Amino acid sequence: MENNQNFEKQLQQFRYLKEQRDMFQGQFEIVNASLGNLYTTKKTLDNLQDGIDENDEILIPIGGIVSIRGAVKDTKKVLVSITQDIVIEKTTEESIEFIDKLMKQHNEQLKFLKERIQTLDYNLQGINQMFQGKMG
Image (cartoon, rainbow, N blue to C red):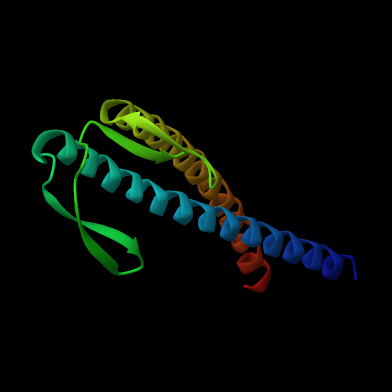
């Protein structure tokens, strides 16, 4: 009876750790995707700084897979979304610095999440080996 209760407790702990691992993995994927968008944005800002002149025609994404043609009016300043409701004007250089800070934060967060996932994987493997030992 006590053996069965211990097994049930171990099984509950395994399920809990698995849920935690899945949650951290989901967060990792979201942050990683956001980091990819930041890399693309930085590359675009670098190109804007280096190779686009005023009145050059560019494609402007307007959502999903749809873009429109537009002309560049000012290559020195861009509009940066700080929050969902706040947009501020920054120079291209300031925007690149801002993106660099965000990328650093994302990389730190990815490192943190990766460490948590690895710790959870280690704990899950330990419990799994214990299950296999009891079954064998």
